[in-house]
Length: 327
Image (cartoon, rainbow, N blue to C red):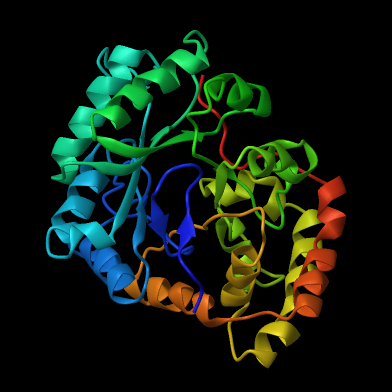
């Protein structure tokens, strides 16, 4: 089993494979979600060695936080790391990004209420806005940390220059952004080097690239026009075929470990020294249980390098992030 990891300068520690909970109560993101299924996802995670739960206000406009909080109440809170995110201001009826210190303070307090807890382990500014000085926004979170309401400060979807501005006082502990073997922009743009050199943790989201890195897709798959995947560059030819070919090269490595392709890919992230933790999402409890088994897969150094090399060609063929930053 892997060892617990530390998030930046904070004293927050968790197992390095967490659960992304956008399908827990995220009724505005996915159709036909059940609250009961969402609770089962969180229960399955906690029962299988996953103690890092990553949620956000925008997942169901607070409902994901409520469901996560309900499940956490049945467990030992001190052994669970809750990360949540905020920045979406819906007070005018429209969603705008707001990093104003007063607004962020209000959002932390509301998240505490929804989660039913006295403290949040990691609080991320979900997206940067256009106007608020980044260090002032982080300063508001630092004051909340001094009050004991949060334990670690995070940024999500910030550019490298924005991260540097936000970290002017050295308060930032962790950054969350899209990164996978298919989308390695942050490896080439200097972000991961900056984080590593400044003892700031990195947590990638979309590590399985919308399921493309699980090995579940075949050459003949098609998507209707109203399916978001039909618009994503990764699912368009010739890139789609190239991705499938790369994933197929991982299968022999997975077979040697009696593991799935997804477990093998997740194990690669867990052994990457530039990655602190990884937070794959799931819609079913069996997916959570399967992902957790990645913590038992130990790749050899040769296998690690082989997987790295398999996807190296994608560094030069980036299609950008899958998640567009809101204005």
